[in-house]
Amino acid sequence: MTSPLFVTRDETLLDELLRLAAAAGITPEVASDAGAALRSWTAAPLVLVGADAAEETSLLGPTRRPGVHVVSWGQVPHELFRTALALGAESVTELPRSDTWLTETLTDLGDQAPARSLVVGVVGGSGGAGATTFACALGQVAAHRGHAVVIDCDPLGPGVDRVLGLESHDGFRWDALCQTTGRLSGRALREALPKRGSLGVLSWYAGTAGSLQAFAVREALSAARRGHDVVVVDLPRAAPPVLEEVVARCDLVLLVVQPTVAGVASAARLATQLGRGPQLRLVVRGHGLDPRDVAKATGVPVLAEMSDQRGLAEAIDLGLGPVRSRRGQLGRAAAGVLDRVAVMGRAA
Image: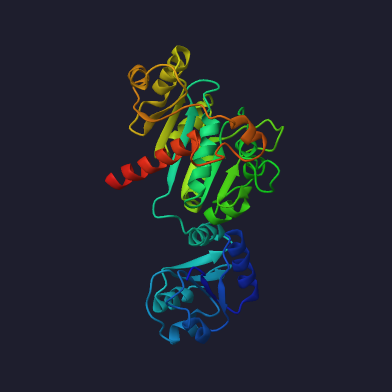
């Protein structure tokens, strides 16, 4: 059971609790008396008992359990603390003063996150390396296995929604998300984004001059991780504050490099900026220098190699996304990366 239990007959208090629950994306069970509350008392993940019903409920001697809070509208009378103690409540909460804490608590109930969601950052070692394309390919393949989202953190890129053919789909973009405050629900974010099947995207509206603040990226990434099995982030090569903010939260960072002298030189500089941590790996795209030489020159191990894919531009222009077939170059490379990361996670 994921619905919290609200126990109150106070209409003012109930209206406020229902408003906070709606903001958190939660539908509660409401009991107007203590007898009705006992039926769901032990099963509910959270129980909020109104000040008007606290004494009546305590007299019935409900099972002692965690997650019980007494809630009062306005100033808390002194005797309510004794009643809360008899009820076994963890706290006495005063509204509207504590509405932020209560909203966050309710939001957490709605986030049935995977046991271990994966966050993968993808960045191009040089311009035109194909990082956005590979990020979208990862998202498409991951969506066949569970809920996945591709987050566009590169305001100067083509837009992950366009690459995936989702630019005309309704849903939240960064433009709206950056105007919100407070904690985001993972489930609410997943349901609000433009999506196709199990794959969602977070990008900008077409033609807007996008810009991001680190705090907005931090909150969106946190909510995305709580609401998806795999989160793929298309990273900018510039914008150090955003780049550092996301990289610090990634389980894996993929540096997509073209195996040319210029491509490797550019990737080596970016690898230095990223710190060459244990989560940094190379994806070598195209033909040219030997991947072993690329790894040696950049100081970063190679995780995947792939050739250029025929018909890629056509697939994207048709709105199909880069992975037209999972047997293609991009599909096999993306699946290989996800499989290897899963093995690495189990070994850790």
